Structures are given as structure tokens and as C-alpha cells.
Length: 115
Image 1 (spheres, rainbow, N blue to C red):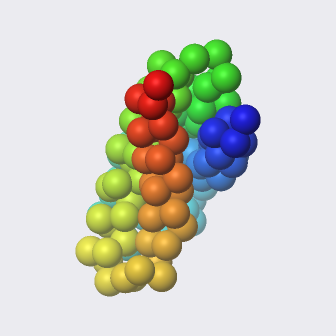
Image 2: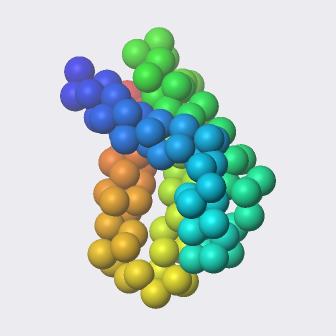
């Protein structure tokens, strides 16, 4: 039961950011491009990965495969986000949220291999 709650928590946190990236409001797109050297198209692809990965996490109660696909998709984006934050000079504080979600997601992924 706890693993499903963790998946719902991570999915709900990530889907918000994913949908914002898909919408790509003017300020957000400009901020990403100047701060992280990411153009609008790359930001939208990351948003789709986050949104679809979150949906897979929401469906994780249907099977381990949903959890594995969702965590892989989300961790791919979170891993790049962590690197971009560190490269931009934000340090731990700037990447703290992404690191926490990446850690929870990784634990959820590893739990799928437990018998």
C-alpha cells in the first residue's frame, strides 16, 4: 500500500511541472532557455515525458511494468534537471526537489524487483 502512495505522491508532484512545461507560458520558456540552455521544443518533450510517466505511476496498481516505465521516464527527466541545476550553479538547494523525487522514484523502481 505504501508503494502506491509514494507513486501517487511522485506522480502528482511531477505531473504539475510536466503540464506547465507542455503549456510553455512565455515567461517559463524564456527562463528555461536563458537559465538552463533548453529551448521550447526540448522543454515540451520533457513535459510530455513527465506527464506520461506520471500517468504510468498513477496506474502502478495494475502491475510492476507500469511502475518501471513511469519511473524510467520520470527519472530520465529528473536526472537531466538535477544536472542542469548543478551546472547553472544552483547547488543542492536548487536541485533539492528534483533529488528528493528522483530518490523516491528510484526506491519505487527497485522495489518492483523484490519478490
